[in-house]
Image (cartoon, helix red, strand yellow):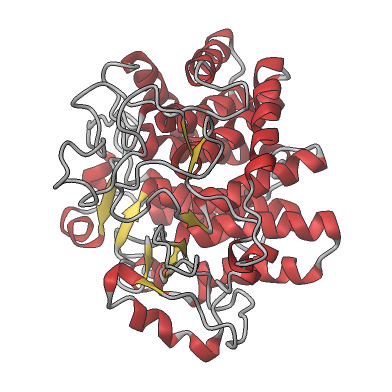
Length: 458
């Protein structure tokens, strides 16, 4: 919580209009909230994080976007902190952040709250302006944060909203278990949800797909609802068969492996078979082949022609698109935004699921690395306690190619980066896992009411 408070990212009603104003200029990037402004308590949401730009005085601007994924993810380490250190205020903020997503913001209102609309139950990407954009991976990571918070606080407060979101994402997932990178409100209304439910698309891109499979597997465990398992398991099988030649990668192949690992770990939880355990070992070994003795996980570019955001091919292209942190394979770069936090979570969950030293040992090495490289700054307390995106583990400093147009080497997210690193460190201290924290979830009680609404007869 201290990092979020010191950075003044918790929006207060007195200055919430500044979010809309900042959203109209320079890709929502503006100076951080004024030090004299009051600090919010989560009821108005949480800003996205720091941009990679560094001003001459060493300060950095903030991305003034209210993102569903970041807000849901950030609630979880706050809830864990409340358990570890008996911080009542941290628990209250965690509750308020999730109430903001599902009750107070436009992220879950409008067509998303209309049971007759094909967008019913989905949660928008960000506010203001992108409430009608639905990335499956962003919905998934927000839900993972919320279910974690629910488990820590032993609360069913958001169970119905979570079940709506799970079913909404399921019914826009095709027969083969793939949902695609994103679905927008306008084509969703034009096509109807059955268009997506009956599609036979494939999308071998774990960055976009795998965390949703993990959510479906978790939901099946809590409900016994077969479509959750059937679509997730079928897609996982096809994706493993397609590795590596047919995999699409976003900023690098390591982030795809890292995200795949969580789905594989939770598949073992649901169906513990020798085949599923071998898939998990195989993918873990593929990723950990590039774990440095320091604990860092080295990035790697995937197959040529399969990448969405590869390195720039010219000086003119530098800084014009999203991009990887490296120029070529072999660069000693660790990506804490796209890979490391998700690898940390997946290794932790794999160790809990299997008891095998492969995952526990790798997770411990990674934990030690992350503790050694956490940002410390007295001159800039707003950055104290964070982790930037790019760490060069041979130089032992935050440094890399800053070619990414939006989320460069010195950016950091209130979700993605900060939340999962802090959350896993918290779970390690409590000797528990996300799966075990949520073992007693009562979310299944809402299925009988919602399934006929979400999947009405023709």
